[in-house]
Length: 399
Image (cartoon, rainbow, N blue to C red; front, side):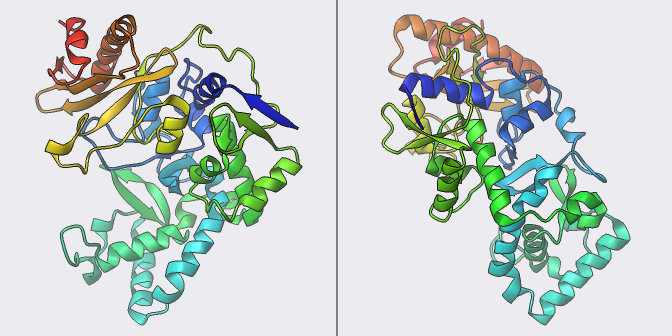
């Protein structure tokens, strides 16, 4: 059986399933269970990446709600390399054993066979057994000296990351954003330690997780969610269609065939359904992960310009997409000036497709949302700088 969706239905389904369409989720765990993971990134110009998808769905939530679920013995959430560095449910950690095995073949077989590296691994294990979870800076070893340029990893850091990738170490939480490394038995309960799902079983579950989160997705969309090799999972996706787990779907304007989970609710896929939200989105939100998908679903061309020299930037250093009336209607370059206790809108832009009435509606709703952001960040004022075609209209609502 095949299904068909219009382009509008695909967009509305995506927003609903990803949880940004209306206030569907009430807690941090609701969001994590919906998405399966939160991506972690070190950029902190406005706010760290793993908090922003939560804010986009929950509004002014307490960040300690996430932190309280991580770290210590038997945490609810733990880090691993899912879609890049990510936070996942503890019970889902074994679903990545296929990746740990692949990393072991790629890195540890050769690297770990060298005597100096064997000795370093032994030192790491002994110090963790003696001291409990530690950040890289707390280990006592001559291997901690950086090599090469300022971003070069030391032998110790390389060993810690290799051991983390293959599951010989796990995350014991974070301290001032520094990962704490721990031995698996210091963190994981026995049933998680002993769970050994097959590679195929794990990938099926993770692909279904991605399919449910997206609502409708191409083969490459599904593969990218957990950074799987798109070519290697083609037989698996085919078998999931044959088993009735996925339904092949034609989406208006999409070149490639798409897939929906069996039994997907397709009711009320209309822009007039009450509850549409205005919110900002992180570059590391699943809505924005795949640039080709965001253009395909929203007609929204989006690039992060962090690494673009300032004179060559089009929209700003760290622009965040603006969701309003169930569409991506603009972007805003936000910075939290923590010392001056100011929220800086360094550039504000609306899409050229908006008419005057839609621009006014966007500015009014965004100004209200910025006040929520200000409260969430604990800042005293909002400054809208005069850059971008939305700045003047936005500023009039914040005087």
